[in-house]
Length: 246
Length: 213
Image (cartoon, rainbow over all chains, first blue to last red; front, side):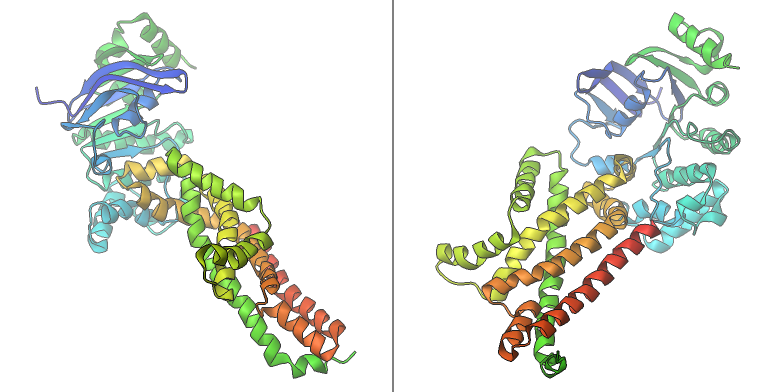
């Protein structure tokens, strides 16, 4: 087996007195799509944000691609290899869609404007919104905004993509267009960590499912066995609730 | 009433008005730049940056402008042993004083943008200074523009304080002419009209900017 892309060691995170993550140990391997699920407040989003150190963790370490994040001097440079997609898109409202995507390649990777534009247009074409390039984020639908945000993250050619509830803020009919883009990424071998409540995506697309509760990892299984035969009682309960939510 | 005194003395009065504009302009440009740094200091998570910025802002906002002007004009020369030129000392006093007010406007503007924008920018590998310059400040500026324009009007009105150390700004020039010609009513009416036009225009701009939001 190849070396892990992300290695999380004894990771703990506190918000004031509240322990969001309790001594997490887990590794993720390249080319895999892993869904992290669990009830709200279970620490899944916090865990995701520790992977690119958007949260300052108290204890433990995250090793990304062989580099320790705890002692990293060049955290910005490491982050540029990790794309992130947020629940509320977080596109820059004062910039056009195109400029949202080209900003980091120009500023961080030093690409020329011409090259950055060319790459951005290819990405927008890939997610099906190249006709929206010169509009501002507020002029796009939620689904289009999220696809633009995915393009922004992909523009740095990251080794890993983090998705933090990418469809939770979307109207139902727009969810599928975003999930389609994500499925396409997974099919092309992108390493992905996805926090989501979309169990259909977890079942069909994910290689593995990590189930969290109360700041701890309760179980980790292949997605098939997670849904067919969950190991823990807590996971069984969760699956029943989310699948029978009619 | 004889408004000819105004026309006769217009070049002198306009020179004073120009001085007022100059003082306001340099005060706004310099104090706004300083205010951006102080505002970023105010929201820093490093205590040794945050505390001095907070002390600066609160100290300056708890003192009248006239006292700050006094300090730089009369007291600093006592300490340093040599006088500052009037315009220079007033400008320094104004910049120090108004940067505290501008800093609070900039701070609330930055905080209106929301921390997730910072996280999003940093997730793409932008450094903190790049994030501030390219993502946060441009958005903050848009949010705080009405308040900034209003504060600029206050700066312009504040230039009259320079009168007390004998600087020939507009109000001082007006009073000199008033004394010389013994036509105070006409001249002070004129001064009121000029301040009204300038400040009302500024306030209208602020209101329009607010509506545009």
